Length: 321
Figure 1: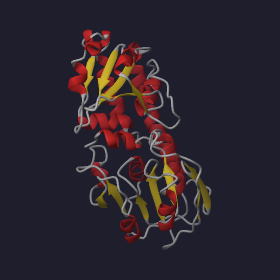
Figure 2: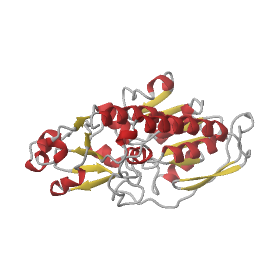
Figure 3: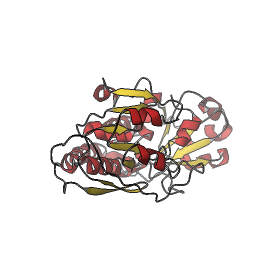
Figure 4: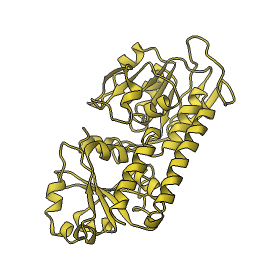
């Protein structure tokens, strides 16, 4: 379940809570020999990522994922089963659950990384989603094993970072082609929706209100499907923008998706406001309340959520045609 705190702490730049910078790490891997890298330039290699760059001497054989987020999705999609991961969601999300069955994990619902557990897994590579990997935490992760900090708001970049670290660039290229084909097919089916203005909003019981921006998973997918742009990104690395109730007209348009995250949800109070009720999209009945899993899915960008998000937006957009 995602509450407001975890909603904000999941953002790539951690809003104003954490500064993101160019820390770098390097290290040598340990463990048994592995097969040569598939489609890559071999090892040693240096991988560019969200916190700088990391040098890997040999193909990793004991991979650990910091969270059950996009880094775990990319790892599993590439056909690699990690030694373990930090589990924020119990049960795991539907798009991840079948592939992660049987993997070792520890409870990460508090958001506090257990470095002791990471050490116990004896990894030769840590893949950690940006937001958990920060300027402050990278040295601790890197003390455990060479660490690659993966993108939160761009599944393509996340997949690149993970595949380069694992030496599986060729398989990553195949996955990208599969996802692009699914998006292109949906765009053709939704040709009548070209230019429609869709927005995605979430609210919490403290009165805070957020919209997904044009660099969020929903924003990138909307552009790929030929829709009008979502609100422009104001802070580099952020997928969300906070707005005031008085700015609610920014989410008016042809279709409005409302995210629900369980604890602290403030949508009922929002919908009682006169400003909400005055929106044209509300008066036209083109508001769709997303289930909690759907809300997570459209917010957390990962290679495994591409087709589910395409299907979700396609179903939603047909109600506006």
